[in-house]
Image 1 (cartoon, rainbow, N blue to C red):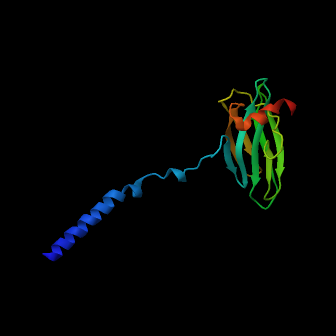
Image 2 (tube, rainbow, N blue to C red; image 1 turned 180 degrees about the horizontal axis):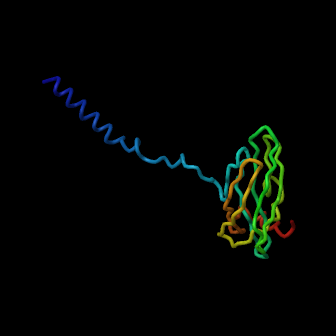
Image 3 (tube, one colour; image 1 turned 45 degrees about the vertical axis):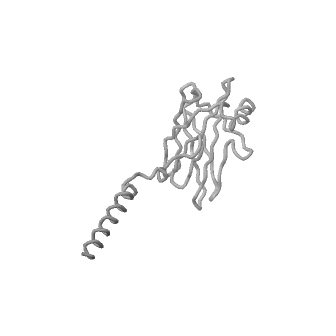
Length: 160
């Protein structure tokens, strides 16, 4: 009789534990999803990391491109930003990033790039970033001074 009670109690305990913790075995862990923890877009282009890419607009129609490009490799990387201008023509800009260095546009006391992607705040504009070996198509959000974080950068756009 004592063995039956112990076996029954053990079975009930095991079922209770599995029944209350079974969700942890099958539920999706959202913190493991890849996402941009910022307002801008990001992409990994081989060893080149593009972070917080944003197109800023002011009320006068001036625009600027901000973002950071980090080289996680031990060799200099040359990359190209290909974009469509407001008038519909395609333009290219080429840049170099030293090994284990970051190239900033609009961050850490640097000016935004004078790229006229067009669009209205809330839109996203597509750019292509490529190196000798890799490429990524990136949808860059268009923002204005509504977010106070970017108000100073937007105010500088006409002075580029």
